[in-house]
Amino acid sequence: MIKIALDAMGGDHAPHDVVHGGIEAARVSKGRFQVVLVGDQHAVQKEVDRHFRVSDLPISIVHASQAVSMEDQPSVVLKHKKDSSIAVAMRLHQEKQVDAVVSAGNTGAVMATALFTLRRVPGIRRPAIGSILPTESGRTILLDVGANVDSRAQDLLEFGVMGSIFYSHLFNETDPRIGLLSVGHESVKGNETTIKAHALFKDSPLNFVGNVEGGDVLRGAAHVVVCDGFVGNIVLKFAESLHGLFKSSLRRLVRKYLFSQIGAVLMKPTFEGIRKVFDYQEYGGAPLLGIQGVCIIGHGRSSPRAVKNAILAAYKMVTKDVNKHIEEKMAAIGAEHATITP
Image (tube, rainbow, N blue to C red):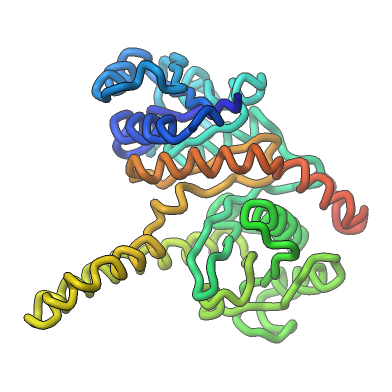
């Protein structure tokens, strides 16, 4: 059975919401996977005991004596918190006792611990965090969204490879379209890194559709949108704010008119469908691509539903063997694009 380690102490509402989400995932497991709750034994068990009918669920607990706060520096965590729930979960993965790790904790600490413990996929210089965004035609994966503030042109090409593999195998798209986020569609538009990356993409075997602008992202111009982590994180935070804007604007307008209130009752199923499209919780978490393992990073304020969906995303990544396909794709591109000097 596939085992997924869940950092029970990571997140703004841990361990309560995280354990709750883990239990909800276990309830829908149907024998496909086991949830391994990693954290303070007493605190985690106390949360588990709050729930009914858990004795037969595929859940286990592994003790970790330390927890990582959102304010902890990654370097400090690596040096002084070697028994944190994040570190223990990653070691379990390294030792092949679990097949994936899910954490809604400190993103920097999760990424640093994953890199230090699991190492990079051969041929990848910089791992990247990808985020799923809704579009008019379905969904797109944007990467990087925060792992790398500065990136080389070669890094952007590798992000495209990883994003293409992820999208292809998780969403059954044979040849995903890849776009490079820039300030114009022309190949000469953008900064020096973007212009160089455009040339690398054009010479690669990837399905590169050229530059895409900010307004093209949610229109679905590309299945995979590539950028550096500085730009990507800004785009992601802006996109996430649309959900709150939609809810508050809709609530304000409905309350303003009587007929709108009547119509809102009739339109409730439609509104619920729209809410799910824009709600980040429906997508669970963001995959950390480029490491020798499966790691899903959740939002710090992840609800139980978000945690459950992150676990389901991790399970799907394991079954689709995404890392193996990334390695094969990098090798296929050839030494010119795949060989990186450390």
